[in-house]
Image (cartoon, rainbow over all chains, first blue to last red; front, top):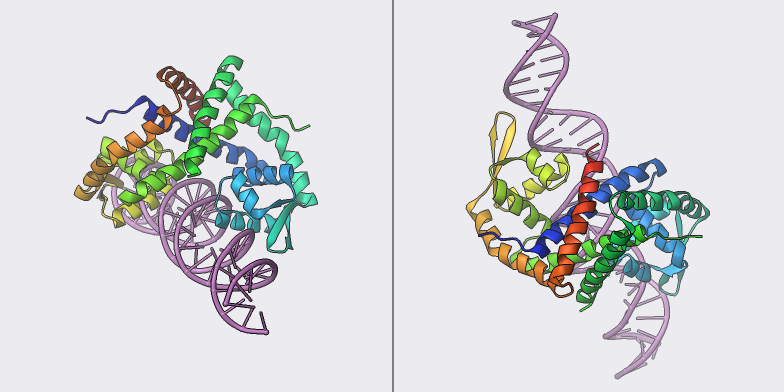
Length: 145
Length: 145
DNA sequence: TTCTTTCGATTGATTAGTCAAGTGATACAA
DNA sequence: TTGTATCACTTGACTAATCAATCGAAAGAA
């Protein structure tokens, strides 16, 4: 009757993994007083600053409204600054934001890495990366039309 | 300086895929007037009913508070019923919920399946499923201690 | 010069989730 | 019998996201 396909089982695993690993990430990042979503955004800003709100929204694949609120929170915390020029708001890290990002980056990387390396060999990781890239590019393509 | 590991690149792909595919799913499910999260919960109830709130929460890995709010919405829409016995609330589908689930199930399965089958061979799918299961079990383990 | 379009950003309403404190009934000990 | 502890569930305050409506400045057309 209700027959699941292999693809749908992959789907479930992926959804569960992402959700659970976000919970773990948030738990880990609590000591740095920051959330996984906030770290993701700060990291993008650190890499591409100065960056416009709309470009940033696209990079982290969230809506214009979503990035507006997120940046309001980050601005309130003093991590980022917005400067208006024409109708564009350019985003960059403040000193506090830079410090926070530098403080957290290596630890977060280490955290993510050790979780995956604790259960997959180097070969398996290469294989998983190749497959994930394929499916992710497919959703990206589908999203843009 | 900022060197990313293979594991962290896998992480990014996974986060992006899950997020984008949820957007696609929600977009697809809009025609059935339901969200991906709601479908997920209805599907679990349909499989395990009657099921207690706490067991349901565990199955979809969300908090007790989260499931309480979600069920309130589903109850308001008339998809589920809660019956109190002792201190446990037993959840089951209403007629309307059953109909909705049956209506949506095949289409959602087809949607998920075609997205993945459009870019991975059967062999690749098997391989991806095996690897995803490994990492997901790892996060699950980590979460429970 | 005024009128309209365009476009980035914001905001209100809603869904979805978290944590922590609170509720209310039962069970069990003093 | 009167606490008190326990346990499932709820709720308030918050983060995070969506969509749709709106704002406001600039650009271009009449």
